[in-house]
Length: 405
Picture 1: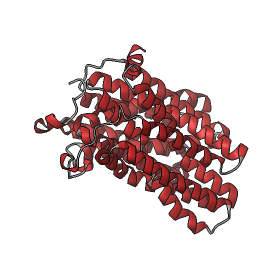
Picture 2: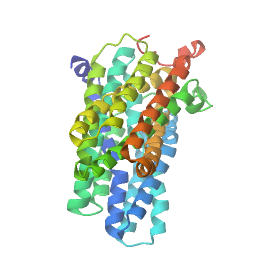
Picture 3: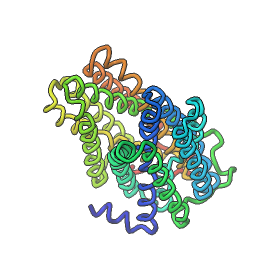
């Protein structure tokens, strides 16, 4: 616990952690909020899913661009302008749905809203790198952020469902935008912890995605995201086939709880392994903890094994963040975190889509088998990446300190 308490004593840290947490709760609310609102007002799950998917895809594609802009121009102006445009976009979707506008109008507005949703988590991680200069504390900071992300994915869906179902259909999205505005505006006022602005000449021109180690790392995140997206749907299918569809949400929450506990504990340990080996080890653990799900045949057993399956999730993301922080130049860190974050999101969307077909063909067992396969692919990618996940000697002057080497 002392490791986390010490982090909060860093000047400015408590403020940007709190603002970042509030501001990114909506990232687990917006797509579900779109689906619930559009379905309630039009009666079409298909339309609601299409609008939500359009929002999610546009957000995943543009998040690295917004983060790159924040690296180049500073976080404050990008936060303010993106929040303004995003607010207009979300309110536009609400207005279009509530007023009964033609369904085709929802899509360009959803693109605008998604494309302007700032990857606040990436900006928070970049701030940690700006206020800390020692590797061991950085990994603890990334662990804290991973745990907070887990909390976000527990609180957000519960909040948006309550607002949209029990209050009124568009209340979920209105609540999301209120949290976005509140967290973002506070973050914009925190100038002390804002990373230094670098002129264009100081930034890599090739783009973060093409930097040494980033293509394979990004592909690994894509595989991990596909694993998570497939596992979500497989769990839903498992509960449904066992006549317990109402308990599916509980199963998914237990998986996140397992991830949250493991992430918190991971951040307390002073690991001696080099971070590249940590990344490989955590990916192998994630793959192995998914194996029992293939063979579970009762709800009682599933309750225990979904907690176990969550144990490998946060450590993979923590070590992945540490690798990003070690191979990407400090002046491009927000973009680096956004690139892998977008890969994770795209993978989750792909997993959601693929798992439905797998479940129809062979039930949850086949879907869980593919979950294990995607875990093996992520581990293999990490093994192949090897040395590319450490800074090249000639880059060391411009790259943040490597963690625990």
